[in-house]
Image 1 (cartoon, rainbow, N blue to C red):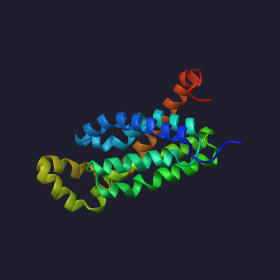
Image 2 (cartoon, one colour):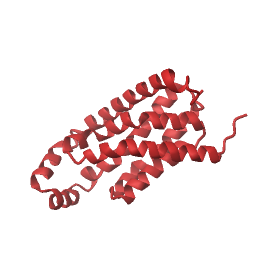
Image 3 (spheres, rainbow, N blue to C red):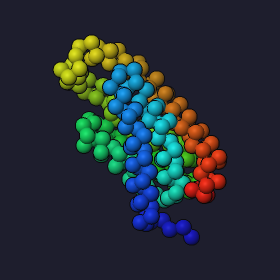
Length: 195
C-alpha cells in the first residue's frame, strides 16, 4: 500500500522540481516586461512549466507535493515584488489542482490534465491589479515606465481581453500537457525516471 504522507525523498523531489520550474519560468517572466509578452505570460508559463510539474507529480504521487510547489513559487515571487493580489490565485489554485489530480490517484491523464489546467491559472494573479486596483496600479506604472508604456497596457488589459488571456492560458496548458506526455513516453519512462 502506498504511503499517503510526504517523506524525505518527496520533499527532495519537491525542492528539485520546484527549482527547475522556477529557473525555466524566470527568463520568460523577465521578458514579460514587454507588454505583448506580458499578455501571453500565463500561457507561456503553462507551456514551459509543464514538464517539471508533471515530473514532480509522477515522482511523488502524493497530495501536498504540487500544493507546496505552487505555493512556494507564489511566495517567492511575492517576496521578489509581485503584487499581493497574486496570492489570491497563487495559493488556492495549486491546492485545488492537487485535489483534482488526487481523484485520479496521480496516474490518469484526464485528471492530471484538468488539474494542470487549473494549476496553470496560478500566474493570472499577477495580472489582477489590472482589474481590481487599476487606477492606483496604472499611476504606479506610469511613474516607473512612462505614459506610452502605461497606455499600451491600458489597451491590452481590459475586461474585453480577459477571456482571451484565460483561453490562451488553457491552450498553453493543453500544449504543455501534450509535450509532457510525449516526453514521458519517449524518454522518462524508458529512462526509469517515472513508471
